[in-house]
Image (cartoon, rainbow, N blue to C red; front, side, top):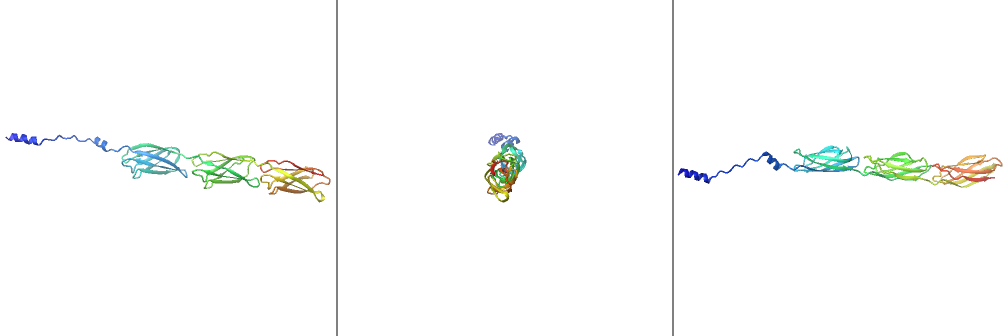
Length: 289
């Protein structure tokens, strides 16, 4: 009887089979987050600065380390949302790479971005002044337009610096008639295409050459010079033994000079001039008799 009761109790309380323990590797596989994913942007700013920004997508995004290499170098840390922003002047044009490391020490993908700027551009104009001067002016367009060197070549060889707004102006002489080119270089070493103007004034012309005899055989010779910037030019008179002198041209182009010729002197008086750029005028003539 006791044996039957014992067997009955054993049947009513069956023993449950024991589950095997979960392995540590299985737990890590279940709860380990995915590899972090990094995104990167690069933007060139004024003053040869570059801003590198982006985000690291990860279950634990904050406090991760992002390291840059290539066209820019440096290290920064992500904020609690995984975003980062890094400003540097230690950069060049080209590709920059970034790799992130999260708080668990896991490496992200390698993200890349390009640091690029457009080359500068330049405009060039000129105006005539006085005394052979010309004024060159223009504007540089660039991310860093101010305090940039503008280099002139051709019949002007010098350099000027742009104002903060990119404009420039230079009053100077040329070495003659011809073209002037202007170029500039930005902070990244990129050179602009050349802008060009041509200095090609019309050669001077002497008109209204005349002579009037006065007392003691003093002759007053006069005329007019038509030229670009006539003021200050000189007219050389010659052609007679007693006629070797010069006359200064006024702002309106007129000129005159009085010379005492030898009594009874006759012949052809000549007048010549050359402008500020070395261009000769026609030879004007007047008969003294």
